[in-house]
Amino acid sequence: TSGRGDADDTGGGTQAAHFVFIPLMAQGHLIPAVDTALLLATHGAICSIVGTPATAARVRRTVDSARQSGLTVRLVEFPLDYAEAGLPEGADNMDNVPVEYMQNYFHAIALLRAPIESYFRAHAPYPTCVVSDFIHPWTTVLAANLGVPRLSFFSMCAFCLLCQHNVERFDAFEGVADHNEAVVVPGLEKRFLVTRAQAPGFFRGSAEWEEFADYIERARAEADGVIMNTFEEMEPEYVAGYAAARKMRVWTVGPVSLYHQRAATLAARGNAIAIDADECLRWLDGKEPGSVVYVSFGSIAQAVAKQAVELGIGLEASGQPFIWVLRNAHEYDEAARAFLDELEARVAGRGLLVRGWAPQVLILSHAAVGGFVTHCGWNSTLEAVTAGLPVVTWPHFTDQFLNEKFTVEVLGIGVSVGVTEPLMYQAVEKEIMVGRDVVEAAVRSVMGGGEEAEERRRRARALAVMARAAMQEGGSSHGNLLDLVSRFKAAS
Ligand code: UDP
Image 1 (cartoon, rainbow, N blue to C red):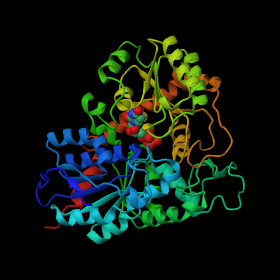
Image 2 (image 1 turned 60 degrees about the vertical axis):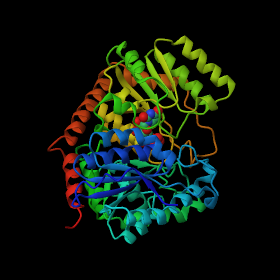
Image 3 (image 1 turned 135 degrees about the vertical axis):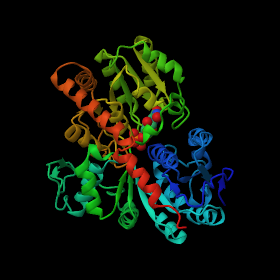
Image 4 (image 1 turned 180 degrees about the vertical axis):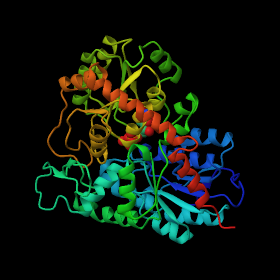
């Protein structure tokens, strides 16, 4: 198979940098990668974004509107060979790949190397740099064969990356049998406690994934640099610390969601939305400033049915207006679905349930929103920071536990519901439930009055000001974007 690109109008001068983005096809990786590509294009780079046809379709509106505004950016599509990889037909994104097929999925993606390589050899302009998600280790070979540098793309914070790196580099869990026993993260000035359950490392913890985990680590170590969706002023010591630990240049370019400045492009960010954007904004217009709590667990996690009931009752009891995003509510059993319908009727006017995809950043930017109950996915966390919002932290898997630590202990803008072990992927056997009382108390604490709550809000607002400044002319992220565009220009 060979790729299919949009009409080749990307020849914006042979001198321009041409970044080939190879995102992981999961909304939490794809959305920020696309935003980053668009930001680079804003500063004159040519960007090609690689994806499967179905995943490309999810970001096509965003890319098309950028093209219409004159940016040299295109999507290049490569279908997966489902049969060859033993993968169910159509399983092309982390949100629709059954967990038991994850290895097949990564195999299928790695098979794209040869077609991607041939495509870019045959279609001008020739790439000047590969920007690949850190979970695509095979792109080391791709970049080497094309003879261009490769940057690892992370929509993660430097704090999380450095903690994880140090825990592994210094064998912090050596001799610790209990995965809930806390150890101090080595090599940092400030003291942070972390358990193996919270920081097992990417793809670590089960024998069948060890080889892939090692492959990813080698690829990360061999990268020519790192692009990170964060901003320097929020975590200067960790950005510097990670660059030093990896001995490589780190370009912080975030918050990349700030690429979107208009309601229309914000509402088109990610999947097709399950609620009319205008209706949603009108609903928010009717609420007091800072009164609404937004609840979402991102693009992959979802509360199990029983947990959704506890969460719903807790939200209702908090007395706050809320928008609650339920990703796959249709998968719940009948009792839970009936509960949601009844809840919806009871809280009509005060609570809005979104069954499917919500225009998250559009909602968070509205003055009526005053807090965010989040699973601590890094994009959601940074979007909360950008909107100046305090958060209730409810991590589910991977880096989300370290992101929680960052928001609560470093930034001081979060209140934890107290989940200490993964609920997905590397999950433990026992059932973990957050009770309705805990939900209610956490929401009241973040949304309520009192000195602590005010202090969290003040900090969050100050961070939002810093985030915007980083992206403006003269700001750190803005400068890093310009540096990337000039450094990776084609040799004349
Ligand atoms: N998102 C959204 N609407 C939804 C769910 C998610 O716009 O209903 C966006 C959200 O704004 C963020 C991304 O999807 O940019 C989710 O990324 P995150 O890192 O927070 O979590 P993940 O989905 O990777 O677990």
